[in-house]
Image 1 (cartoon, helix red, strand yellow):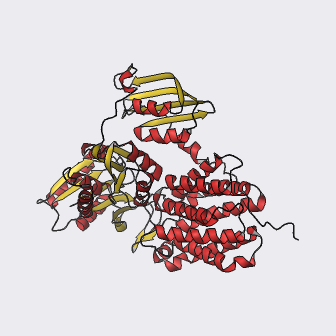
Image 2 (cartoon, rainbow, N blue to C red):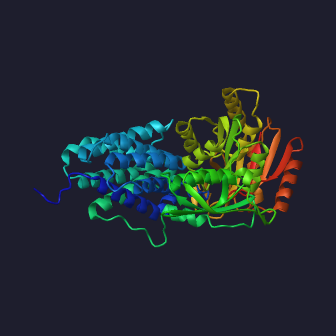
Image 3 (cartoon, helix red, strand yellow):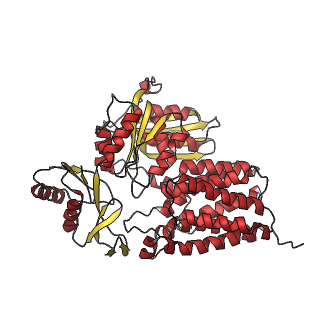
Length: 545
């Protein structure tokens, strides 16, 4: 008998493999991002898959050291679903769901179980996508499953079997440009497939060496990175009450749950868990809600609530036990980027704004928390980005509330959808009307190229200005004004009555007013509106309806 043969994977082996996979994709997330075909500076896939898997790995890390395989895979599945970001993150969460289902309660993992897990991962991933596209992450997971299904009787060593599955995945990934012409045109392989291979490489490395892949020197675990981003900045006061306190933990509720529950209620959040004591800081307009959530963890001390707008300290005693108002019939959650866009959505009675968009896709958990915080019987979610729709669609299955996603692909579509809402209509009728009105909005976005590329038949150089319409680069030029008017001309037609221009945080107000004025002269019969959106990435967003 060969003593080097590894016939089974135990729970402790699996935990190490999960940690190694999480570290590997975090190390290589930028490289996976670079595989994105689109030259817009979005950096989606590697970041989304890394954050999704890191959330899942963190949940496994929190389990008892004697947790069973079933408990580990169940925790991995549930946390991935809630932490899923972007389309790639949602598909990854479904792959992990399939892996758990394929294990079917096994005590250890052998080659037969690996085969079942891989085939089940393929099946759940394909079911999750309404119109599967080959040459993507789906193809890579399918061809790995086909190899596993065909060859598993030939293997006794799980390590060798996984290495062979990984090799089949590499071969599949290399073929993706031949299946999907846009990849070949851009000279890259599929980013989602690359992400899956990166995860599996990390897991196999741990099984071979007995050690997890180490994080690169400039990388930090997702949790640490999140805390780093939440450094306190009170320069711009959006939330009135600076709320601080200590929690003496006495309940079983996790600090992660507490943090997730209060995050939609403010910004500048800092939650530091030091075993028995949790230090909390948040800027919020709802200190009472934050305190009620904290009391579920334990006793509060050192409570301080400062009204930053009036520059004096004031404990809001009446908010400590707020009366719960009866639920209203309808509530709204919208994803948007930019202070101006935030104000526009709030002016249309949107209850909760989730910060996010092209460069930052919120997770399913963030959208779920937002929906849970709205005291309404029926809740509409407006994702306002095509890469957030799938994550939003997972929310309804995670809550008892009636949640409907209006599949808005841009913020102007979301604004029109909200404006078309009718309080006197039923949920289904409103959903249909809001969706129909949103689809009538044509949107052009002006941005810059993050890298040299060839997309949609155009040769694009880094730094070029691009006009993006319906996800495709429609025009490219060195001159921003040329791109602005060419893009506007493409979306304005004879049926158009209103044109709205939203200028971003990197656009000059005077220049925006000049361009809008010139657009009005060019289309004197149209109602041309200029608004400050404050969005990043896009200098201007132009909508026509």
